Length: 288
Image (cartoon, rainbow, N blue to C red; front, side, top):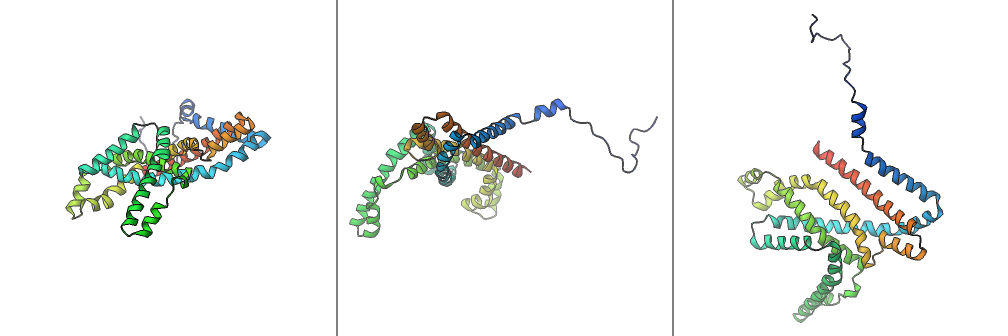
């Protein structure tokens, strides 16, 4: 009987069994193909139908407001979330409880209510507080700083800035939990090893723990960014002229509701799909 593991002739190639067609069809991302088809069909309709073209040309004017609001709010939320996340794991009782209080309050109130409260209650209260501080500083002889604070007018704070503040405070709490989980996922032995090398707590956190934690939480932060992009549609309640508000205005003026809201939906879908693909590429890069 011939030996089963006899050497193959030089240059011979072993033919591996092909994966069954049914298994390949099951693994194919049909959901993604359906989204691509929807986007292509809608793009074709927009490019060929005058009413859809008109709605697209009107609504796309709000894209810059949506993108700027998202980027500004998310940048602030990242910083706020990192500080709060460090507070959540801090041994300082005051810092830890303040951070936990902030997170629990934000998590316990609906986002739409938070937007109204922050933009229409917290911001005016803050400007009044700054005015009072400015008057006190002026009385103490610091006229330049006091005058600048006293000159702040609540009516002069634009709604887009209020929307950025509201979104950043809200998502700062969500980001805090992501950072907290990322920091706690790092083995405690690394902190102990860093401290044994002469580092203090904050040096070890800055140079050893945080770089690894941030690497771990980048995909989650990417998903948070996508969520914030979608939630910017809520700031339309403040009359901020993002694409949702512009679409509402267009539909109200022309009564072309299918054209306006179909275009709006596809714009959001396109942005979120592109960002989702980037997040998946980021995950694969850090997992490799």
